[in-house]
Length: 386
Image 1 (spheres, rainbow, N blue to C red):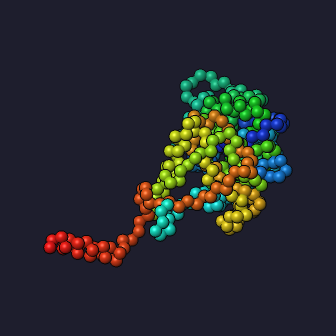
Image 2 (image 1 turned 45 degrees about the horizontal axis):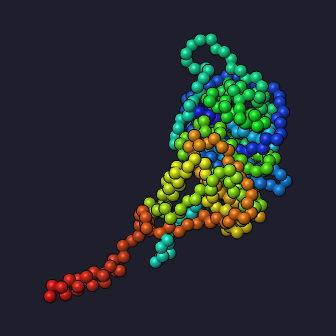
């Protein structure tokens, strides 16, 4: 048993929503423990949805955390009580390859041209100081219907009949979450969803961790953000990829209209893109928007052709779309989903920045080019003196 877990709420919100299947039930077990020492901190989320042709969606979820690996704990709402034997892993480098393919890239113009660490609310509730008789929390209706070890992960498939009792059970079993998680937990319980509990095994390696992979039957990809809001830091970064036979767009979130001409060089090869993007999301009326940074058939992308992991996992006939957002916890009240739109345009991720704003990358001083100008000025001054 791990003796601490993800900060505040041990929830990675990045996974799926199809609510038509009812979960099965079995008996659960577990012991009480709660600790807020050296919590793991979640600062960003990256997820890939691969829309298959058989009515299923494959989800690749990257686990990002800061803190001791032994403290890691994670809960993900899933469509139904899947078989843990169907959960696999993908190499840790998958999302780095996706970044190389689809993240914004900024170029200098051709010559002569122009162009957190919120520590969370911790383990508030039973088990702390204050004295009094200990009353065992109500965990009735919560069941573990499957368990397995998958790569570096210890997996539990959990079903529940009450969000409050599920929150109690998770605290009892070392998933360190606040009692305020009960309300959003209840929302997913009411939708008929199950929960994927994840911890790192004792011998999990340090550094990047393999991505979790599993399939579910559903009409479209959804990111359930409601649980993330409980423990998210301000301006939580969210990156989602959709790989499908056709172009996908946000179904219920606004498409952020971002002016790349606002981006400036801040040093050699560096820009203020992240700062400008955060400001654009802060200025959005309700904060619920996504920027489409890339949308292109993979067959047309030369970087994809050189990406060994991505090429193995994604069909070359697919169109890949990258969505990017920064959201504050109070805005995470609507789960974004994605729908097909074959008329949506291609979006290029390469941008040429001029030098009208900010500071251009440093260039060596051309003394030879300044010499003729200096001679002209000197001659002009001597003419005036005469």
